[in-house]
Image (tube, rainbow, N blue to C red; front, side, top):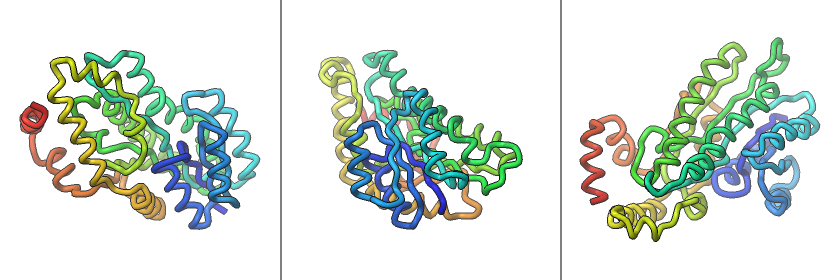
Length: 280
């Protein structure tokens, strides 16, 4: 039986990924931060699902979890590590503290690095590995290549994750371990409802007030047209099954309008002009 490790499996994309891999016959190991979430997942999935309780920012707990996983999978190794756990910190640069930036990077970047380093041996990054090398799939975002106002902490963390993923993939050639970036657009998940935003009222009362209100309305509008996490999970599973996948996949509704045009078909200055008008 092949083994899949998914971080941030309690809700949203992580939950949907755990569900589809479990339903396809894989043994799924999912990380959660709270015991009640571990119990819920075990009740939902039952056989062939195992919960790990750790926060990706607790590097000691991450390292300690490897022993538990080794007991579960024995000598089978990991077929895939999906680094999904993440948070969204939003706000203007002026009003966002360095501590909030640090928190964003601790989860979205350093958490990924900690988990990846801990589990590389089980993916096959050891000399004369006897099993089949595994894959690493890092959940990035369209915001990993497109940056927008009021989202600098989140966008910066995802840009960094993209670079880390590319460097990692090129270092792992010798072990046969592939690294694939999954970059979704708006997904119907709790991440933005749980967004760690600085005081909205402080921004509203500042020079950014009118533009920030446009941003809030855009977020609400995007949520209404967002892709469902189950639909994204199916696409991720299809990528996992490919023998020769691309290094990066972008998944969102209205991809050409919402991503291809601003990312590839107009200049940065032209995009600046559009954003300036949009956010007043």
